[in-house]
Amino acid sequence: MEENKLDTEEKIKAAAARLFTQKGYAATKTRDIAEEAGINLSLLNYYFRSKEKLFNLIMGEKIRQFFGIVVPVITDDSLDLELKIELFVEKYIETLTQNPDLPIFVLNEIRNDPKHFVEEIGANKILMSSSLMNQIRAKNPDINPVHFVMNLMGMSVFPFLSKPVFMASQVVDENSFKALMDERRKLIPIWMNTILGSK
Amino acid sequence: MEENKLDTEEKIKAAAARLFTQKGYAATKTRDIAEEAGINLSLLNYYFRSKEKLFNLIMGEKIRQFFGIVVPVITDDSLDLELKIELFVEKYIETLTQNPDLPIFVLNEIRNDPKHFVEEIGANKILMSSSLMNQIRAKNPDINPVHFVMNLMGMSVFPFLSKPVFMASQVVDENSFKALMDERRKLIPIWMNTILGSK
DNA sequence: AATTGTTTTAATCATTTGTTCAATAATGGG
DNA sequence: CCCATTATTGAACAAATGATTAAAACAATT
Image 1 (cartoon, rainbow over the protein chains, first blue to last red):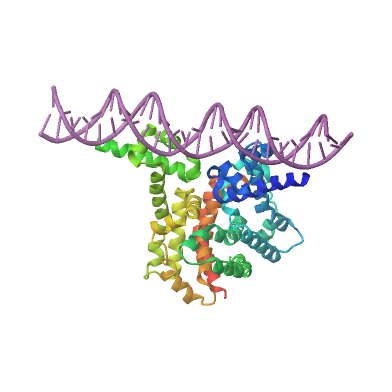
Image 2 (cartoon, chains in turn brown, cyan, green, yellow):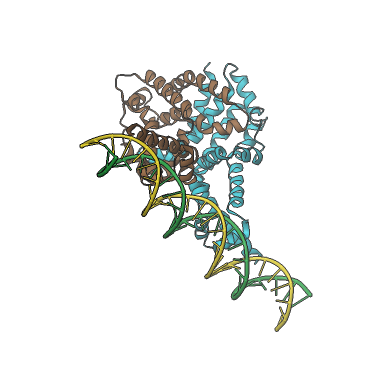
């Protein structure tokens, strides 16, 4: 019974995570979640009180997942810049390959509720004061390091955001996209280094 | 009266465009639109039949806006690659500075309804057969040109997608973001060229 | 087996939401 | 000025939706 309890609770969370990330908060109905989880509608409120509380729970996890991947990497003083970039790209592409809907969901919800994001992850100033930033500044003092972070994230994350566009345009299919992302693991670090070298 | 008709019709469209792009289809209520437009709720259905029809109208315009900017550029045979990249970046950053919510809205709705996107803009194969692609292939035959398009779009568009994150993290404010984007107009073409040169 | 606490179910409620409708006001042509 | 058309309004409806409740089923403890 203790086991069963966790079972249904986890079933609801899993179903909610799937639907929320896929369609967003407003488009996801509590009845959809119940059906997807194979449970009675009332159980959702029984375990999580309300749709909103359930959503906040899921969103917190997703935000931590999205940013948590790379925080240990960018803040680790013992890694040099090139290795840091390699790990950053590696981690991101790996995680997003498993969770393609993660970026658009996270970006959407941060836009809808920036405060929750700041509270959720102690977001402020982690990035700016990270050793990554200092290493970038050291390598190329002429350019605002935020540019490089935008480039690094953009090159890693944007393909997943725009995947539906490229798929619909028949530029890629599921397989060739996967192959492209595999190539990018090696290419992005190379590109980032050439960019960092150019003054 | 003819003028007045267009007036209210345009007021509704403008309000709908604002809310739909800001909050998406499901989170936008017809009553919100009516209030934002300062009109009676019934007029929405009077002029546009239904919420969905109004939405499709708006979305079509937004999709054309988002992709229409650059189609003339990437398909123009008379422009060489470097100039093409410059124009591409210039046009995108200019348009998105005026319409910061455009990218996330468009990407969201294409994911929700890829078919509508394909029908709306004759999306397929425009990109792959464009002169841009051939020019990229000519410059660097070793790498799939889709990578460069992803980089070019990613570097131009991703900052606007992630702007709420950087704002909430206090990495940028409204002014410094604007300044960064101005810098990027010049920097992205330089970066793209160094990337294209690296084999 | 009886009792207690927990989980699940079905029915129901109160709001919200998209839409319709009948009535009224405004507009413009004959 | 009158009339037909068009535009606008307020009230109302039906369906959808998040939430609650009371009862039943289940599990565990004594």
